[in-house]
Image (cartoon, rainbow, N blue to C red; front, side, top):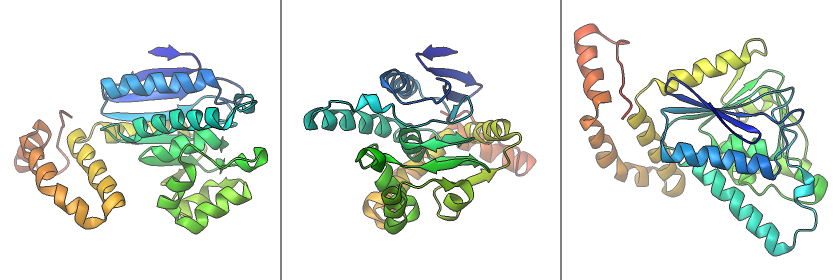
Length: 260
């Protein structure tokens, strides 16, 4: 296990686990931003087979430490957003399944970080909000546009412009949250879910991510154009070879994956 300021990074078998740990509010200040960035850069250099992002304490995060904004010029503000968007892109570009587990209140920067992950799990009592209007901002870590991808533009504008808090069930209905899990045992259930993905066919998961991204950028036909290369390359992986052999010898449900 390693720590970068208020961020812990550990490995549970093939799964990397990044934990926000700056009680009581896990605020995104300079130390938190630098810690998350350092952890993601390390994972980008040596990709795991899966990533779980979670938090310790009574909240996931109370959002950004507003003192970070005090006295910034327009140019300095633009540089800050550019830096944070680079972090979001690093998360999205990881070649493995990424899961964000929100056990409680999840505001602003942490919520936007969750939207950069492939899948968002929420406890029943979790609440989410992009509340930047209280300081005259629009969310600038990619939140509005990624909400629009998941929930549609009208819902994205409603969530951002009202600055209200939304429960997990509502956001699951809006396709922002993938699954709502019981509060009791949430942390263990989220880890088990992420571990199951990490034990899967890593190269196939990476191909899936690229195809979905291509569809978002250029439509289904743009993704179709990538299938022969991406899908064809999978036949050279130990994942596919071993899974096909085990299926033919032992039936479905017996596959094991090397992940490389």
